[in-house]
Length: 114
Length: 114
Image (cartoon, each protein chain N blue to C red):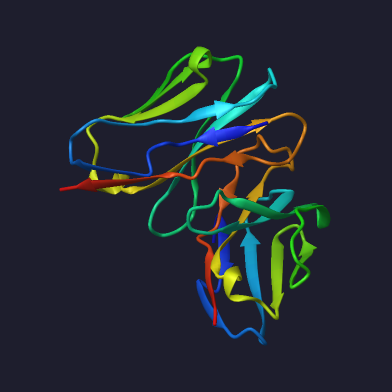
C-alpha cells in the first residue's frame, strides 16, 4: 500500500459512543495531521504531530483525543460527541511540520453524530 | 491578517471549455507560498502546485496553468479543454510566516458536463 489510508470511510455514532479513527501513511513522512472539513467552512487544522510528538492543538475540544504511537500511524479517539461534530475528518502527512511542505491526504472519514 | 478568497462557489462548464478559477490572497509577509489542491469526489485532497512569493513566473503543466500576479494578490488557475475527470472541488491555500498552518479558501466546486 502507498499513500495515506484512513479507516473507516464512514462512521455513524451516537453521542454517548466511543469510537476511533485510524490513519496510516507509507510515505516515510515525519509529520501527520488531523483536519476537519465542514460544509461552507475553511479546512480546520486540528492537531499536528512531528515524530510522534504533538506539536499543535488548535483549541480542539477534549472530546477529540489524538494518539500517535509511531510516525506511520495516527488515531483520533472520539467520545461524547455532539451533532455539530459531524464532518469529514481528513488525515494528512508531510515531510516536515513546516506549513509550506506539500501535504498528502487520505480519503477521509465521513462522520455522522446522531 | 491572512486570508484566501475564492469568490466562485460553483462553476459549471461543458467539456472542452476553458475555465479559470480565481484565488485572491491577503498577507503582510513578504515571503509566502501559495498552493492549489484538488478534491475529487473520492475525498482526498491532491496537491497540484506550490508557488513561492519570489517566483512570479506563470506555470503550465499539461492542460493546467497558473497565473501568479503579486500586483493584484491573485493566483488564478486555468484548465484548458476541460474534461469530465476535472470535476472536483479546488482549493487555494496560503502559507506565510514561521508557522505550521495553511490558510485555506472555501473552495470552488467545478462541474464539467459531457
